[in-house]
Image (tube, rainbow, N blue to C red; front, side, top):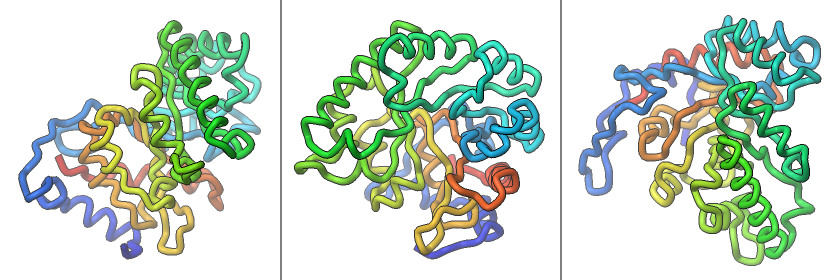
Length: 291
């Protein structure tokens, strides 16, 4: 793969070819527009993971969310509420005209009464998904530990289902590293029912792991309700959307098969967080998905 700049990215995306939606043997696959992509191939409601602008969130949640809306984002994914109550968060979203389909939480958040409170908060704020952001290495050194995590996720999924919200999982790179011959990502897909846990595919990390998103779309169609849109440079570093080589237009063309409904821009460590999300939003606004 070659590194392309944003100008070439937008140009190539706008001219998305028929070849991009050809299946095995060249047979044309017809996809209707998923709910978040219009008939012209444009993403209707671009989202952002607020972890990207955590420096601004720590200073002023209200102003940060307002600025995000000004850039053209319609959806936000929270990574902490910075001391605000669920009602306050809902009011902030209402004022800015935004919705928040998802919130990121940690493994420790799904234990005890705290998890019940999170589910109740999700209903107040309007989250449709409670998403595990990942878990540290101490919980994945052995296959037995991974089996235990799988059981924890199954139970969390059941609790979320009772509370009217969907449990979800966000990947990094480690889920594709085998533990005693088993890759955690494969274990989750196989041993956790789709009704109890859907996936938020991080397109940077799955690429970093050397995996092809389409392999998983084929294996578990409809399970990937969300994705993190973050780009990769030729040297493997994280860059703003449109500054790398990941072919988002091609990936998003498979949204119906994948189950994709929400597209959240993210950059883990941008030089300027506000400039980063503004640039990435502009890139996605110009991109045309081939449908």
